[in-house]
Length: 327
Image (cartoon, rainbow, N blue to C red; front, side, top):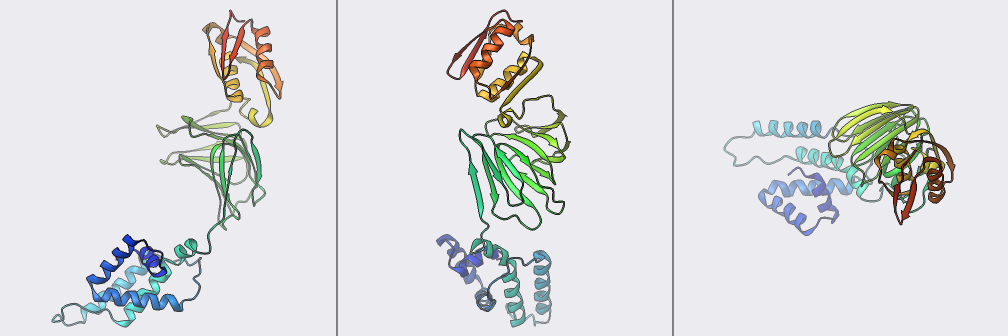
């Protein structure tokens, strides 16, 4: 048996009934196992508080112990039924096992990392992280981060949309994790759009450079004014130049259009106001619009569009129906 985490739980009295039965069956298979467990317990009691930062090459250490066991077996007469583990090997194995699950036990007991979870609903929120990086969350987003960052990296998780202004620290890369992708940066500003319901996840870089990596293995390097798009179902990554001037409208509370095709106007309104837009006459989609709105309200925007493009807009709850000749 080499499930040291299970043995640790058994010693600590944290094993479930099923796990206890597993360990006890292992003990019954060979009397040497029971002796080994007692040695581990003894080593455990005298080891004091474990150092959570112990670093051990598990495979190399275990192979070393196994090698010593084989050496002992070679000098034992073959008339013996089963070679017994000598005291040195038992103690060495006990010390090794204590080292192997030292970090695990420390995390499971009193040295748990404190994680802060932030969830937004109909309003966004600004968060200042331990390294002074700033995260601005859009509505209906979920963001988690540690109270204190690790010594070698700054790891956070996001589901939803957020704008990041990351403090530069070459020694501690900043990583945003998501079940579909990872984004790694050193110091830059960028927007991530990654709601669970969306087919695609996008990263739009404002300054600096980021690596956008699919969990399946692909990755792209993005610089200022570039967009990375991940098709989550197909695990396909694309890179393009940002042509959407309103990708930060949710943050700036501004909508700006310059000779913009009506299809793109509709897409911007759909995202900003969370409405569905149905255009009856497809010729209207070929129209272009120029306009600027600060702290826009949907009725005000639609009135301007009606007068400018010769259309009629009717709002029914979260649906907007557009008719008319257009242009």
